Structures are given as structure tokens and as C-alpha cells.
Image 1 (cartoon, rainbow over the protein chains, first blue to last red):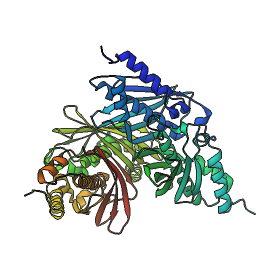
Image 2: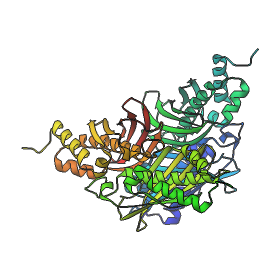
Image 3: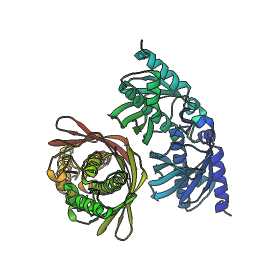
Length: 155
Length: 155
Length: 155
Length: 155
């Protein structure tokens, strides 16, 4: 008998955890819509409370940074978990407790206008101490709103 | 007769506007505690909703980025306004409507733990098209939590 | 009669200028191999003098940053020139004299080993004051060595 | 008997190695003028070959990035060595062979004009896997030319 989770179980449990148990992500309405060990996708809907400046009716730059950081963290986490020999709830939780953002750069390309926003991330450096992810934010029309790069501590 | 605001009026009106009329800043509880044309200070209290991961009880990285971006924006705005020949509500509003973050880098130094957080910013490049500010986040004990650098469009 | 350069003349003259008249680029052996208003490519060969650490026989991180900054600058310049109404040697030179790097981020993915290195850049934000380019460095085998993002003053 | 180096010997040997055995640093004329485990200083003289654009007679942005990366690497290395239990030539060399730049951000504040340039660095995050340093470049008159932030792999 083993406690190893199969991939489907693991993805379901992580998606549920990330979308429901993290207070600030809940406040912003960020939900993980898909991920594997190389890419991730996080979505959220426009809400007036996410507005930076009411004169411009656009997302606060901090909302954009939050969504990009989260999307990067999700793909880095999935990448870490894939490298675990035994994938039990305990080893996964131990692994995730080491994960932290070291630095994050956000490039703002266009005003953050839209009804829904989609943050995507992919791994560009995968190591046993440090991982780097690149992220993008688009709205529901495909307008490219921001780019990001995050460096994460993983070991 | 002139509509030019004296400095005290201007600071009072801007502080009130920034702390009360910007929805996402209100959601996070960010308030401008002081500023001049070279430095600014933004404060906020710990709230459970600002938590990233409930296992660690620390600020979400996006909260840190939001506070640093805002502190940088405030000092850049004050610097822009100082360079206006006539400081009327109309010229100030026109000037501020041009202000936007181009890019933001956040360096996370320590877990974001504390009861109160203080983001400070100072201008390192002041131009008529682009300004750059450096920011820091400390908690009420003086622990240094994060550094940031923001490049802003000002013209 | 007009002094407007046709596109072929302009590309030839700029390529020649960038590859031959800029002392530090010459020192490093950086040559512009192609460009248009959206993308650029800069190439250089391994030379022992470009080595960072003789124990590792890899490119100095500053060589990588130099090549990425130059590739980004070339595509931003081409993009500026394309927006000029009249493209004469004088207007082009005036336009280029305004160009400057505001900030540059380099992400190092792998040790810089190879016989030839290819830096590519594309525009991600094109404005009349500020432009942003993303860059990559590969070696002749296609190994991905570094990523970069540069913000440039253009107006 | 022990092979442990005393602090004076170690500093002399490292300073000599860094200023003489690293080809690209020699090409640029970068010399380590002082360092301890918290700060470092790297100096170099103007040379025409370091020029970016002959129209402006200023440093190439890549020279600035190289000097900042090097100053950051020196202070991070000194910090790593200080944490070694036994400081022998072998343990020091092993330790330094792990050191690598993960990412580097350079903010260009003023054109790089001057006769001598001084890059200084100090540690802002010191860990057993990752260290972060902040750097500045001034000329001999004290004009502030650039800022930088570097993240380094140390473990």
C-alpha cells in the first residue's frame, strides 16, 4: 500500500488548495485554471475594488503583480513536486513550505482594462535551489497587458 | 486672484485623495503618512486577508509589491507637481493623469511578518519623461522586508 | 529632390555604423546581422578575452548583458526610425541621439559556453517616450543562455 | 598545523586573483580596491574602447553592467568565504566555483562620463542558497551614474 497520489488526485487537490485556502488570492478572486510542470494559468474577473485609479478605471499595478507572482509560483511548485520521488501529501507540503519568491519584475505594457484577466506562466530555469518563470497577463480579448519575470527559492 | 494652491493645501488634498479615493489601496488599507518631492511614506496594518500562505502567516508578495509601487508613485507624483509652474487643481490633475508605472522590481528579503508595515520611497532619477524611485518595506520593529525599484512614465 | 533614404540604403548604413563605429561593440566583436522595426539579431564569436572565470571557461555576465542591451537598442532604434516622417541622415541621427537605456534586467539561465552567440530582440512596448524590448541569448547549438528585458528612452 | 589562511593573506590573494586572472575584467581594467564580507569596491579608468556611442563619449551600458555585476559578485564571495568553517585555498576555491549570477538589474541614471569610475556593492540578503547585493556606480566627481541589484546563487 502507498500514499502516493496519482496525478489527477494531486492536481485536483492542489488546484482546490490554491484557489480556496490562500486569503489574499481569494480577496482578489484569483483561481488556478490549469497547470502542469511547465506552464500554469490563473484567471480573475474585473471587480471595482481591484481598480487603481478611478479616473482611468484600470487594474492597480499591484493586482497585476500579484497575479503574475501567483501564476509563476504555481508552475514552480508543480515543477518541484514533479521532481519528488514520493508524492505524498506530507512530502508535497514539505516541499511547498520551502517555496518563496526572491525577486519579481513586472513590465506594464497597456492599461489593465477588461472583464476577465488571464495570467500565464512558464518555467525558464529549473534547478534544485532556484527556479525562474516568465509570466504574461492578457485580458479576455487577448490584449497583452503585462509581462513578468520571477525568481523563486525552491530548495 | 489665483487658484494656485499653497503647499499645505496641496499636501492635504493629495493625501486625502490617495488614501481615500483609490479602491485597491483602500482594500489593502494603504494610507499616505507623509511625502515631499523627494521622499514618501505609506503605512498599512496587518490584516488576515493580506496573508499569502496561511501556513506561514506572512504577507502575500503581491501586497508588498502593491505597497512599494504606491509609495514610489506618490513620490514621483509629488516630484512632478513640484515642477509645475502653476499648481491649480486642474494642472495637478492633468499632470497626474499622465503618471503610470512602466516597470517594477521587488526584492523579497524576509518573510512579511508584523503588525504594521511602512513603505518608504525616494527619487533616484527625475526627468521630464521618466522618473525612477527606490523603495523599502519595513515592519514596526524595523525588520527590513523588501526592496523595490520602479520606473514611471511622467510626461 | 529629396534626401530621404530608401529602406535598403538605410538598413545598410545603420548596420555598417552599428557594427563598426561603436568602440565597445567592436571590442566585443558584436555585429548586427539583421533587424527590422520589430526584431533584431546581433552575433559574436567566442574569444578568450570575453571569459569571466578561467576555471569555468564561460562568458562574463557583463558580455551577455552588453549583447542583450545592444540587440534591444538596435530594434528600438529601428522602431523609432520607422516612425519618422522624413528619413534623412539628419533626422535619423537626431532621433538616435535621444535613445538611451533606462533599465536592463538580465536573467542568466545556463553557463555561457559556445563558439558563436546570437542575441535576438523584439519590441514589446512601443511608445513615443519609452520603448521596452525582450531579448534572448543562444549559442550556435541553440542552447538558451540568457533572457533580458530592457526599457529605453526614445523621445 | 593548519592551512587556514589568516584574513590578511586571504584578502591579498583574492584581490590579486580577481584583478589579474579574470580575462574580461582585465580587458575592462576592473580592479578590486577593497572588500569585506558586507561591502566591496571596484574601480576602473576611462578608456576610449569602453565608449558606447562616439557621438556622446559615454560608457557603454554593458561596461556599467559588467562593473556592477563584478562588484556584487566580490561582496557575495567574501560573504560566502566568511561563513566557511575552515578557510583553506581548497575550501575557498570550492566555495567560489558554486557562485553564479542568477539575475542582474541595472538602472541607468546619468550618462557615464568621467575619468575614473567607482562601483560599490553591499549585501542586502545573505543566505546559504541565494544572496542579493545592491550596487552603485559613481565617477571621480561623485556623480551617481547607475544603480544595480544582483541575485547570486551561492550554495
